[in-house]
Image (cartoon, rainbow over all chains, first blue to last red; front, side, top):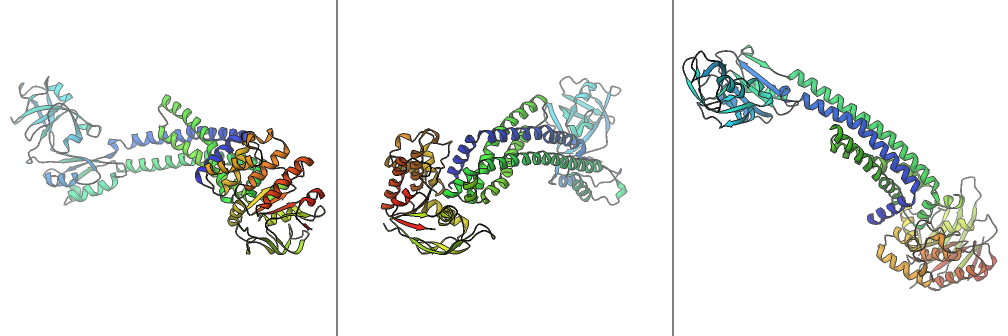
Length: 362
Length: 215
């Protein structure tokens, strides 16, 4: 049969068989709704947990060199920046106290780090401009400490070096430890001691850890201190995998139950309407076309059920902001596919039945 | 147009291994352009032979051939295609889909033969007009008489311009007038060169046929 004719016949047949179609609508709606409310919620929870566990904190590696070591330098920072899985790399000097240059020593101090690397990825500029080498940004907290109302001025180190302040920053989540100080743009001569590397994903933490150590290549492992969320990342990945497996299992159980119910309805339908199928066989429909006809008509009947469940799921999702719409839509599509698959065995059974016996005895 | 010959050779059939053997090596050629009555007492396999000829049942031995080619042992897909394109069936109870219109019911046979909907509707309308049923095209099977239903079934059987029309007790549920109408229509169909085979136990029907094959 031509596909368009098959589709039209399946639609007409589904409309003609009102009771079985209504049952398929009900079963598919119930199946999809239960799937959305259980597996969908589990998947939504998994995603929420995953987002929490894979937050910036869980992806930040911090490596500090022993005093005097020089393997953290602009060159190695540049190599780290070039790694595929590095979302942001920022190296800094040890902190030194600075005060508002206008107020002089004795006024309130804040830490200054000279930094190099991906400054725009590490902090957000909320006032002024990005600093050129020899200039600095102040954090909002340091701005308050210094009383720099406009965020423009200068800070002074204990040894009397004055650094112009050209803007105000707010650190991104991963670099929240920089929220109380001043970031000076280094001219390349500063002695870098610590480099922070933000991995692009939880899965990239372990390879990034190894890669960063390989790039820095400390002559002696004791010369570097690494603060890494490696264990946490592994735990998070395992937990994520377990939750995903659990959600899939739950979904499989719900769809399996729905599949069984739809198959039962279709089996009853093909038994009751055996003369209809026998007539079609006698008139020349092939077995494959008959299987497709029954399966497509079941899938078509499942469409309104799945749509109703999806609408209900979406409205629930919107109310609770828990089940993402694409999960709802995916479950609805899966529900329709399940109905199609459920119809295949009874349809195949009907197609294998002897049409003569059916026509003479049904 | 010369229609192919439907024939059986050394035909034997039984429904199950322990079932009674039927036909005992039947040899027969059905001549195109004639109406053949399959007749005999109940239980001798009149309808069964019709279904064997229509490739719905496979003989235990021997063969059904169409235009000299044995087709009874062909794969199911090929036999289905042959039923859809080369054979027309008329059942005792018409067997029209009660949920569809008369026009749709006639078109049904063409759907399985790969016909285009527009062409099928046009051909179906022509056939309904030929058998005086065009005014019933939009009706449902439940809204027409038994005789009309049987003529609709004949329209459906003819839609694909088949070589062979197989009718199983086509007048079994009809009064004499309607039976004559249907038999007249079958004779017209045969006059076009088709092979028409009617399974019947009705002497009146046998009398109207050109040939008789007693089982």
